[in-house]
Structures are given as C-alpha cells and as structure tokens.
Length: 113
Length: 113
Image (cartoon, rainbow over all chains, first blue to last red; front, side, top):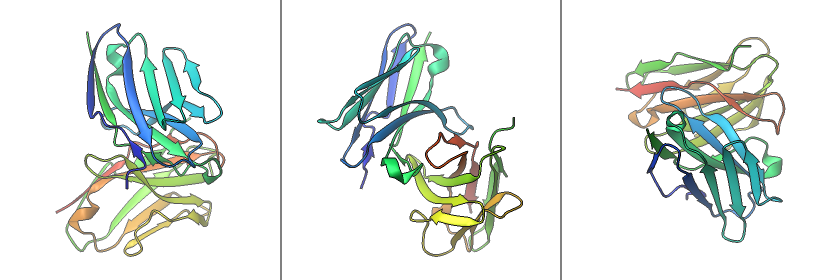
C-alpha cells in the first residue's frame, strides 16, 4: 500500500518558469511533511518541510503548500533553474515517530535552459 | 565536517553470499537510519538505531537481515544469503536527535548476480 504517492514520474519546465510538483497521501495520522532533492549517485538532501498546523511554508525560491482536507501537498519552485534538475521526493511522518519517513516514488524534474 | 560516509559505493555479490554495508554517521550524530530504494520506488524505512541499541526495526525483513551500531565503529547492515530481490540502493542517514533533520549518505548500490 502506497501511503505517499507522487503520480507524475517526470516534469519538464523551461528555465525561469514555475515548477509545481505534487504529492498525495492517504494516512490521516501524518502530521509532518518534507521534500527531498536527489542528484544521481548522491543521497537525498533535505529541501523544505511543513507541519500539519500550517498550510504554507516558504524558503527562498521554494514554497510548500499543504491541503489537509484533500491530503495533498505541492512544492513550487520559482523561478526554476537548470541546477534544480533532480529527482524530488515527497516524504511524510507521524510526529512522534521520529525520522521514520514514508517516501513517495519521486518525480524527475528537468529544467531546460 | 564530513558528511555521512557509506562504503562500499558499489557491492556485487552472488546469490547465497553475504553482504556487509557500512555507515559512519556525521560527527556528533548518535542516531542512524537505514533505508532501501528498489528500482522505480521511493526509499523505504528499514531500521533505526541509536548507539548499541535497535530502536525500531519494523521495516527490516524478518530473515537474513540484521543491523548493528556498536559503541565504537560504523553501523553495519548485514544481509545473509543474498537473493536477486535484495538488489537495491541502500541509504544510511544520521541525525543528532530523534526528531531532528536527517542527513543521508550517498548510498551503497548492491547488485546480486
């Protein structure tokens, strides 16, 4: 059973435009959500997170939106840059479970210059 | 400050052999996590250890897999009598505390022939 789903395997965006990566979850007990970025031959690196008590968190070019009623979150990158080309993983956890994260399958983002 | 170090980067084993994957956490981190990524899937939690103790092994297969994090030395993920289905990327992560940010290593790619 996939508790965290990223339904778009890949996304292609022009440099300077907005990239929107989507993620859906099924477990209503999840209360903390994270996005990780992964380059080939490297481990995932933390990008941005959001607690379930918020609906938006912003960090520079990256904004994460959470819609709890729809069990949906999205990552917006604006403006997109070629260096943003990577695999993006959505992850979720229940607060008291520490770092036992449940990951989606990832979305490959390609930013064309 | 060196990041999370995993070795080897690539490991090839024949069916029935043993695989040993090593992980040295970041300096000052006493919490270690192992995740596995099968092809076309997201990372899946395997085990969480804190120095000399297994805290949560709910993601570990019941047979053939074991993990340790001794007082001295790296954390070891051991897979006995490997099968083709064990072929995957194994990522180690560490954190300074239970609910603090995870830092991932570059992973070990295990290939079982």
